Figure 1 (cartoon, rainbow, N blue to C red):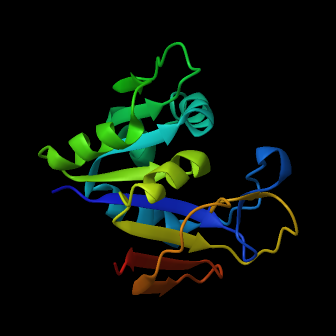
Figure 2 (figure 1 turned 90 degrees about the vertical axis):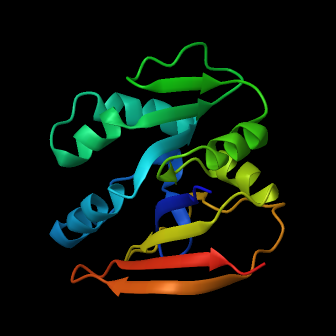
Figure 3 (figure 1 turned 180 degrees about the vertical axis):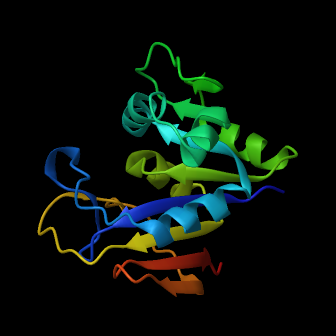
Length: 180
């Protein structure tokens, strides 16, 4: 069975975006670039909620380089009841049952499945116990306010730390797996 992995950059106070969705506080440097490039090889499928999809599609369709090649070439699924079309190359628009679709994708042959951003969609996946690993890039910044990754109303999830990797920039990469 394929694994579903969430990957998000977070502020020390738990926000994955500043007010208005601003992301300019992310610390991105050579070590993080190498980590991303090394880890993308284990994945061939990306899942997004509507808002994250729109931002990613707008950025990556005009970007160049190894990460852009991966983002543009991977199979992508966007889960939305309001989006009318998904034009980013290799994208399937899913308007139906997200949990059922993700269960099917996990049972199909292939590599790991990544979810970037997509807090509301991630909460849906968490409610259905579909997340196999949480990867966090903890940034050395306190935002004070913003958009939290983990939404109110989700059930508590006990986690086991499987990797800690501090970077010279102060970002700490953390991998957690649910224990139950």
